[in-house]
Amino acid sequence: MPYTIAVSFDKFIERISITGNQADIAESRCKSIVNLLGKEFNILEAFPLGSLVSGTSLSGFADADVMLVLHYGAHAENKSPTEFLQSVRDKLSEYNTRMAKKNGQAVTLYFKTWPNVDIVPAYRVSDDGSFYCYKIPNANNNSWIETRPKIHINNMKKASAQKIHLIKMIKEWNRKHSSYLSSFHIEVMALSYENFYSDYAWHVFKFFEHMHTKIQSYIPSPSGLDGYVDDYLSDSDRLEASNRIEAALGKSRDAWSAHYNNNDKESIEKFGKLFGDRFPSYG
Image (cartoon, rainbow, N blue to C red):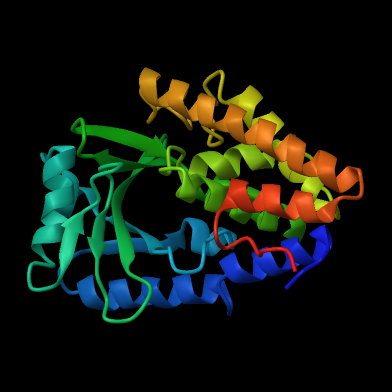
């Protein structure tokens, strides 16, 4: 067991990280979905997205996300967003599926082996003959969402390994505190945080400070389209998330201060209370 903060964070990262190449895992599941649905749908494009692609998934708590771009005339025309999403689920009726209720944008397909897959159906929108965006359904309010997910995927590829580890830590904290924030929201906030190469104790504290500033106002979509990264939060959820971030900011400040004052035992204990049981104990 660790006696220093540096070793504690190394072990924490090891515990919450998925072994193997996450992007390869996501790509493999994407191919499985295309093979499964290729005879049922006119699939124009399919690609993995989400935390496995960005490398920020948590061990034991990760699904694969696949965007399935379907022919508009064959599958989306004259359908409401809810009907469009349901039509994909209907084609999977003999399998174990559910509608992803949290964001209303996907059908979850359960596999016998990890990971399960959140299938996000979409269709392309063109402007003067050129690609403009994808539209995906939001069954929660029966609306269409315009998105360009490859922009975020490419932005995440530029993040340092240390920032990727930091994102996983914050996602673990979020998971232990009722998952008020979406993974995408956390990743976008991290992209506007400085790159760094050492001292996780300091940067956990500073990132919670960064988050506390960011949660106070809406964050525009990184795709440049209308909409906001955090418009999934109701006013009450935003207030609760802000309160939880503020509490984490205070705890991380105290934990870093103990480390700064050469009391790594106290620092490890305080970070353990912040992050939960997967953060290693002192000793």
